[in-house]
Amino acid sequence: MATRIVLIGAGSAQFGFDMLGDFFQSAVLSDCEIVLHDINSKALERVSRAGQEFIDARGLGIQLVATLSREEALLGADYCVIAIEVGDRFALWELDQSVPRQFGFKQTFGENGGPGGLFHSLRIVPPILEICADIERICPEAWIFNYSNPMSRICTTVHRAFPDLKFVGLCHEIASLYEHLPAILDVPIRALSFRAGGLNHFSVLVEARFKDSGKDAYPEILAKAADYFERVPDMGSVMRRLFAADAGGTVESEAEWRSGVSPWAERGAFRVLLERFHCLPITTDSHIGEYLQWAPDAADHQAVLDFYTYYKKWTLRGDPKIKSTRSERLVKIIEAMLTDDRYEEAAVNLPNRGFISQLPDFMVVEVPAWIDRKGVEGIRLDAMPQGFAGLLTNQVAVHDLTAQAIIDQSRDLVAQALLVDPTVDQTKAIEPMIDAMIERQPDFLGYLR
Image 1 (tube, rainbow, N blue to C red):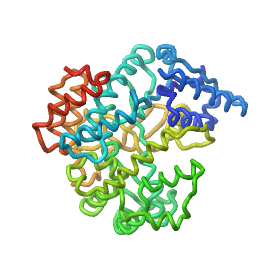
Image 2: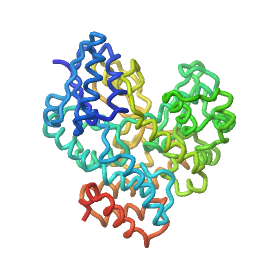
Image 3: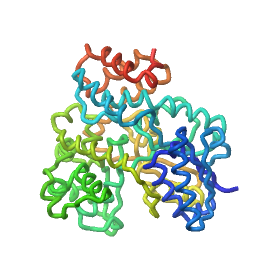
């Protein structure tokens, strides 16, 4: 039988179009069945039509199916891919950012960590648990790959509620090392071996070596990284330029563009981790700053705002296309599972099984993994920098209480999850903020008792 891959949330232009472009390039999956599922009929039809036109124009052997029925989609599934948001993604996200700030809570971004990350979790995890309940009932042997955020809180909660499911989180942030390490060391990426880990959006390079000599490359990376990153454009600047090019507007020359970039820009908290904790983060302030109580003091908030502004514009751009690309790591993972072509994947999110010794087993961590016919096998990271490990442990109770608050539908545990968060420095505004968020998002947070 053909391999059956179900894309849940396929109506999302960014997810559906990009993912199909990758699957369509795979020789291993040339006769697979891809099932598109979404609850938005218009969005689903748009992606389905574009996908079928691509298949027909190139004579591909892939079978494409679209359905609004989750039960129909999941029947016989071998792989399920989840990339959903609920409601108006950006309107709700902006409430996650603005309401806590109105009550005096400091946060740099409001998506994955801090108060905003908690409310995002409270909103998105329940429907993902419903999806997982259906998978457990209909196709319990399927591998499930999650792209939704907040990644680590979603994955931690799912594994607590459904410990037997093969649920793995995937994130794109690890790609930054493939871009920056060759530039820092002036060698091709194929000349390096490296491993990174931590929590999703809160990970650092743990080890790096030159393949030819086996020499430790990390000291040289640390010696050269500050000068390099002081001059590298921040993500907001990169996305602004990409958006101008995509929209057909005037694009600055490389020299003009770089001359207008602020030194360090969206890397203030990143810089502290690099220079004080002597480790290289794999992401910038908009994400990593969400977990750090001192990030509001270190971050360039204008640069973080610029990143959000252009990320929103990029996501909502009007005319997405299916491209002939091979950029999604998921396709390689599925290929390796089917062919038993064992390889090391740079970053997956799995329950900690001693992979990071400083964190408990229940917590989902981001680590490299071996991929083969047996599935996904995490790799232990013994060289986690001591100081950064201390920052990771500050998140243990946050994740524990978030997961239990959702499972128990407990408003009391929501308040506790806020009070153990290192970014929260007050108590009197906790209850009024929870009230305000439930009032503004009753369809998604009204289950809390």
